[in-house]
Image (tube, rainbow, N blue to C red; front, top):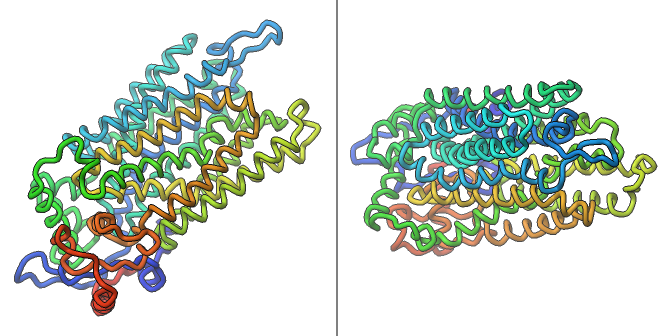
Length: 559
């Protein structure tokens, strides 16, 4: 919490490319109300607790994906679920069996992400998080109750994946709808921080158990996994419902009270009045448009663009190659001659976790666009070097004869993780949580998350086949996608730092140019009159900027 308190909103307003606009049309919710302009706390204990408890969904995500990498090199797990090779008198996994055990989790997560949307709209955000936590527990039970059937482990991971997929869709949605706007990016990005933390903890536990010559070597790690969904399932019962979901269900006063508690301000405060009015305007606009059909997520205002953009961003998060490293880290570094690949894995997990912490600062202080483009460029360079060393300097027949090459590959793997953990890891979740209007948010986030898990499965299943064919040249493929990611962000992603969700929606509907979006100022009355308003002229923009300046100090954020 001390780290988060270092963020200063006043500095953000002075130096950010995306200032938080204060508009004259959003300062009065209803006639005759005197608004409170007292400073807004940057972070309250309630918003902090909400972010931490909900982010346990990310921890479950990371722990589930991280543990399997260690299992596949444990002697007991290999003996029970692998295939015996008489020539070498040893056990190993075929490419198909390895791909299914690792990859079926991702198939489950893809399905879970897709079906999470209607469940979240019907049950509410908080109760659906408890529901998916219970599903994940069922999956762990299926896995841990066998010691001979590899397909039971695979199917157990599929069921556990349903829970992980549902949580990876609902948790960022809940966080983006609930978090105060000045820390929304940080709160949603905390989901990825906990993903990294879960991966790191699973690596440490695997390291402590891998020498045990019994089922305990993998069952201990698997059994500890019961704790995380249990914490989330119970913890969410004490969290408030998303204020935007509550408002759309007609529970207006509940929504107001939740926002007051999360912002740490009284009900008549300007920031609450502005957000309540924006929610009201958007809801009235949607009611006027009538009930949404299934296909309206593609035909609504600028929706096809945003659906495809969300799918592209979540796909590119996988195609950067991060999970290639995390899923097969042990196998990769055994091939470089490292004696204990579990230690290497812990090092990578530690870099991933601790470098996600500055990512929480980056998302709110440096802007989404700049961070994603810089991160993708950095990862491109790292993978080019990684692949080149593996292809041309490492002796694959006798890795011990080229120790310098093996160490260099580990170093550039860590450099890659630094770039991923500070940018594409956390920020993609934040952007996808902000990208869609409330009318379509659940379904669209589900589709984008499903794309993430689809590529997760494809990479996890086909990696053994690809590596056996082209070895470390595989890295060039990921490098190419990192380069593509730079172009996608520059030409298609708007800067959303410091804006309300309703303003983000307006930016896309008005076709604001992404490379100009950081300086965009919302015209007066645009949220209410979005269908009839035209983009502001340069002169009008100056007038609005002037009006913004006049109100700039009315709602300050204190440390």
